[in-house]
Length: 180
Image 1: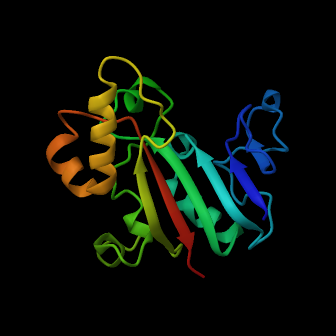
Image 2: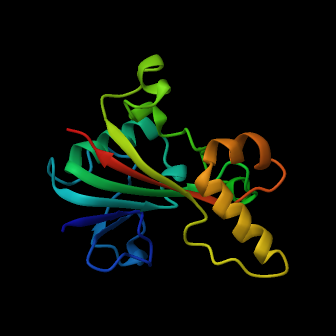
């Protein structure tokens, strides 16, 4: 399996080709992800990871089109971003985008946004959306947060509509599959 880690920083996924703008990151490829095209051939990668990367980029529809171009048919795209209700989404002055559970619906033909607001020719099916997938809960409110995370992952629309403003979680991970 050929993997690509976009914006890998110093935490490149084992076995992946790492891309980062910072030469000090130790990435395999030094490239500004705001510049297109990316330095890869069409349909190269089985898996593309972007862990806390896309919220920093200028043109998200164009980024998704480029990910689509370099992904193989059926490739898994794993994108982790700060949840729009989390304070972490707003602390970093370099964040340009904020994400809800529907943010990638514009690229999914099974989502109502896809037909209503044609944004791009890139097509991805949403396989899974997970709240706080990598976050290990600690502290006095651990049980509450574990319960909230379980509820949010089971009923994401209800959590976002009724509870997220009262009990915000921190991040979202989207698992998308390329449709070519």
